[in-house]
Length: 168
Image 1 (spheres, rainbow, N blue to C red):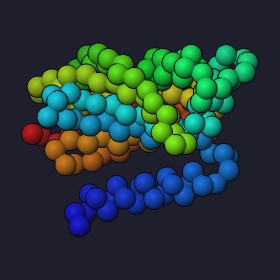
Image 2: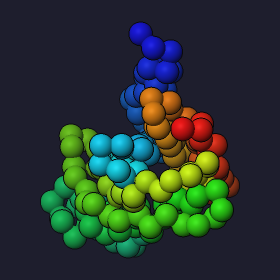
Image 3: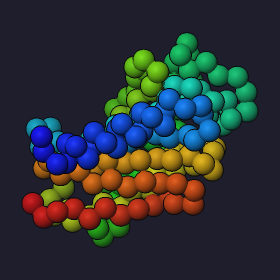
């Protein structure tokens, strides 16, 4: 078993253990994948459905039913896409195109992508999703490129982090 696989497995195991607790700690995972097959950087956000629905209620100051309402799902998806961005090492924003969203079991997924550009040395991530709703929100980002995985954790006042990429 490769060492990076063990590391990812442990991160997911810890995340799963946290999810089993009551919602004292709000958490989400984002996967940023350099996909050479599609030529895109693919962004996949995963939120607990419970948290997404409560966020829609908070943000709209009213009722929400994210399972039954396509409008509530789209509201949350648009909110996520407005509160997450990527820039290259020169500060140039990479234009993320929303791909869609789906509900899978007890999770809501939100997807976006942008073409891979040559010469990327680092990515600066702005991840403010749910940090304006719950100060205790934790957003974990796993960035995958060429079999290497690097992680960044957004908590409290952290809104932006830079991940250095290994040369290709």
